[in-house]
Length: 161
Image (cartoon, rainbow, N blue to C red; front, side, top):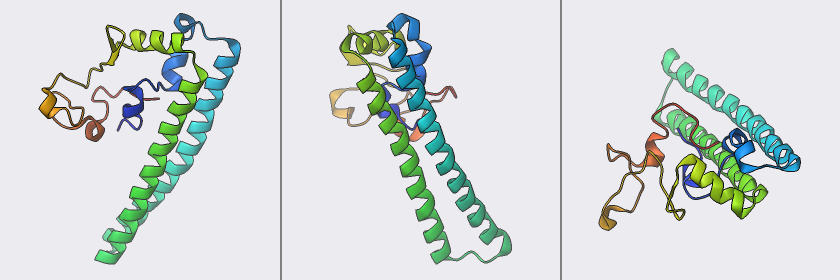
């Protein structure tokens, strides 16, 4: 799942991808420190939320395994899991906000070009987006016409962070 793909595709890069291009972007030592801190902060929060998700999933599994699953329990636990996933996604998206604030406009434009997102330096383009007619442009899509937000990055690469 690409937790921050909407950010990445709309000029809000993630810190890891920016750090991958540190030399080409001419990042200052201060910017590198900020970005490294952003990665560490995000990772700490994401791991904590991931552990909570795993615990809720284990609880759900235990209810089914024991034969004690019922509609109320399923509704409660799946709602908790969904809320945790929402919090996890927000952690990723907030990190992209912080990363964008750490870059100059020149660096941001260069990043877009380095990642292949710019068509003539203006419009975000990503390998998961395909050209669609304006009447179909309500959501970014993949070649399989599945909304991008539902499929994440099909290559298994980290598409947002």
